Image 1 (cartoon, rainbow, N blue to C red):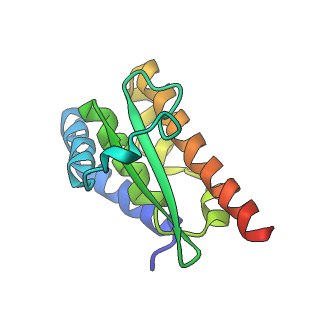
Image 2: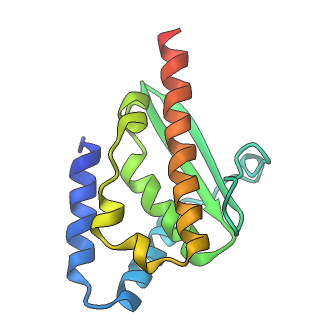
Length: 142
């Protein structure tokens, strides 16, 4: 099983391969297409990511001390962004997720190439995923 940092390094390598941002956006969109469909019952108010302009649902489940994320969005790029975050963080312990330094976001230039609304949405997704990590870590320690 790869560490969060190993996955981030893979993502950085993949993005370095693309010459321009149109290709990088297509790559981001492909992450959304790889997401399995989120069950309708998981598309709840509680699972909505606050601070996203489009609707983004994020659900977490704990299996064998690993947190697994499922996600969906009604917008193509946003679905790709949440798919990218699921790829990096899903399948790790709550502690690893809560403490992850997500350096790849700056490294691949996401912040400067996303609109302010999308950048805020991405920050909200990361915050929600880390909050799930903290919440499950607290449950495990209780």
